[in-house]
Amino acid sequence: MSDAQSALSTAIRSVLLADAGLLTIIGADGVHDRLLTKAAMPYVVLREIVSTEWGADDDGGLEHQLLIDCWSGQSGHRQAETMAGLIRASLDNRPLALEGFSLIGLYHVRTRTRRETKTDAHVAEMTFRAVTAE
Image (tube, rainbow, N blue to C red):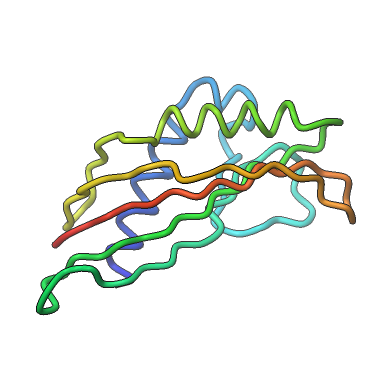
């Protein structure tokens, strides 16, 4: 399972780092795979991938739930929502080349915007669904 997760994560990171509009906001070092408590905002975090088998007879088919967070230190939700919109445009229903796997589909499920009470940061929490096969 982790190989498909790794291939999916790598492909998503590559797409996000190729998005000129997103990079204008977050910079070249703005995509991370963990929450950085002392990093300068704004940035994007590939927070979690949860994978489950969906194929018959252990044929290597996996369904993945991807969680991506857009963190902004600006007042209001606007910057976090803008980042989320750019990410959705880059990933939703887009074909991605995965090393060693086939991507059957990648779809945006929902975006939730909130204010982080401890830091006053604004976060757009995005959920995507992906299906891969060997």
